[in-house]
Image (cartoon, rainbow, N blue to C red; front, top):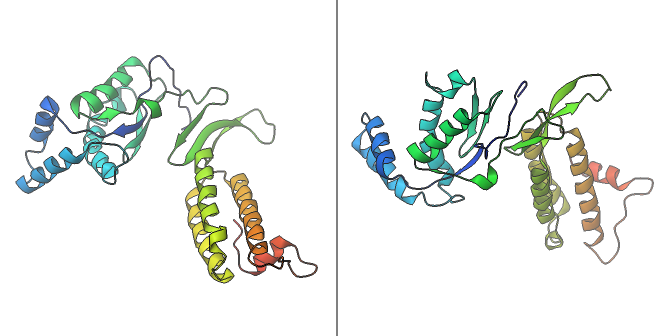
Length: 260
């Protein structure tokens, strides 16, 4: 991400694709590129193309990955922007980010023509934008992370690239935990409930371990312990209390609850 600079002249071409069936010349051109494929594989792709109707479907990410494979090829070709614009493409299924020092008209036009004109897909403009990450307060959200350029924490005259769980990711995680620590779970034995929470938290934290996630982990620890404390109090008509001289957090830790 270092050194990346964007300028905004037109609507950006960075974001999620909405898969639609191929038609016309785009279908013919891609079929020519598939001449070396077996007839069985070509028939299979044609059937999938007919089903690619909306974003968010179960098969949509798979279809986008198949179609956008060809975009990867032309992007990194000798006459592609990976060479003449020194651009970098980072893609996961139907989400991608293009990084370059200057997001000029030629680069944006290339992406639009290849995605919509050649492949017959549709760019989701609502989830697409151009961002100058050198600008004050500018942030890029991608794959659950937020990326931004922050000032040095020790007051030095320098900046560093910060990455941490995005606000949307944190909100989704809290909603997931609310469902796991709910009044409907009062029947569940506490060791079993804590075991389920531990497995979930370890998996979630493992994904977000790279970067600067300490503050988000602290917020999540506090959220889980507060939810569990309320959960314990409503499990019985007699209010639950930790052992004498022990805090709620310490008691939950003794019960095996992990701390991120």
